[in-house]
Image (cartoon, rainbow, N blue to C red; front, side):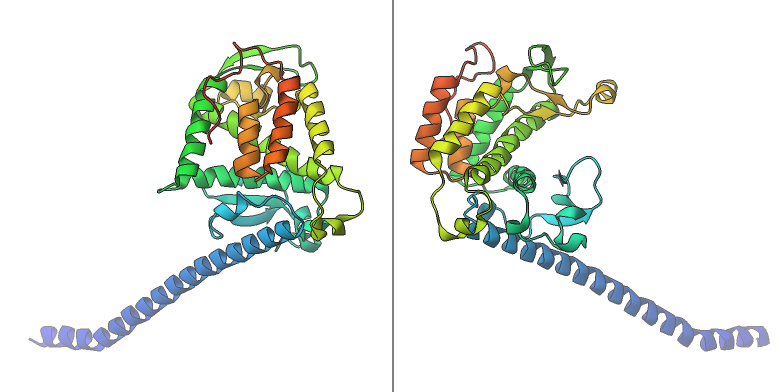
Length: 315
């Protein structure tokens, strides 16, 4: 009995300490959980502010915002890192955009430099990656509008008939040297995405280049874009076949030889794709689209049997 009595006394002495420990653990757990939720909320809030500022500044500079305004402000998480291969990267799995620190204000890695202080090339790169975010958003959208559903249906059809069996240029400097490739589902979707993003970035760069150099303040005055100069550059891009995309090979052996495989001129951006991107992504005027269409009809020389789809562009 004495032994039991001693054991019982020990238990009675320890019980309050155990209860206090459990309570402390519970409180610490709640604190950590609360901090995690607060961090997540803060991150979402930061992304929303980042996105809101970006769209507002793009509007002020009369840069295209049609597709940007369709993406929820909290959809993309922005980060800054010391990148080596590229100035920006987009990771669709995490809806995360990584920008090089050189694009941040004072290179501090906290917020983007004002768009008015980015070079034309930097804005081209930024818009290229922003378009990837847009395509990511459209893929994730649970209840797409009729316009979005039509856009994605067109994209998937182009993937099937233009980007699954392609010609590539093994040596980028020798465009006449071509090899045939049968692309996987992942490779062909990436080839389409990169081709479209190349055009979106090029369109922004061209808009900036055809405006008077050194007079960025004129963009905030609402001055109309120099459409003839823009379409003249489009004609040159057609002749140079510069609006071509690329993809990263899935095969490790081929990827070791070349991280990117560039599509041959025959598989550059098609006229239906280009006109759709002008209308639905860039929000170009009807007159500008009409003039671009005329340029493409004069310069387009893609054989009917290669790199062409029978389906018309989405409306």
